[in-house]
Image 1 (cartoon, rainbow, N blue to C red):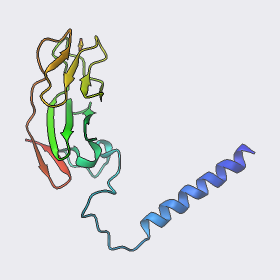
Image 2 (cartoon, protein in one colour):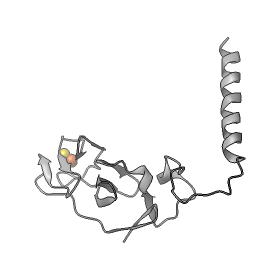
Image 3 (cartoon, rainbow, N blue to C red):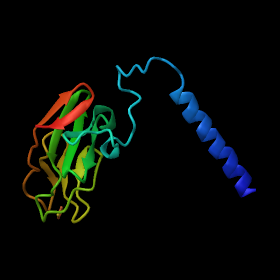
Image 4 (cartoon, rainbow, N blue to C red):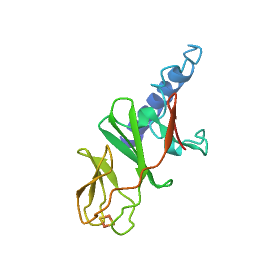
Length: 141
Ligand code: FES
């Protein structure tokens, strides 16, 4: 029973993939809405690119652990980036949620707009990282 179900699911996924890749719409990617959800690990992402705008939720953010950067989008179209290294004891922050950047090591929380400390034990904000937003691409610098 399980094997049969698995076959059906696999076939369904293949059909979806085929349908997606063969629609012949000219590959229009002007709105970027079809970008993969895991841009940080997508082989096509260049070394300079941190992430894509569509991967940063409005009112939240994304922790890019391999780059040690957290990118937030406090309001639509307004992107910020900060060091993901917690100013308390150097852990990488673990998540963005409920309007704050959160460090799981000891519970510090930083605002997504300016990385100001909203809850200790950290006493200093996360350092700002410079970014450039070009189209749907977010780069350091
Ligand atoms: Fe982040 Fe301690 S290292 S709260």
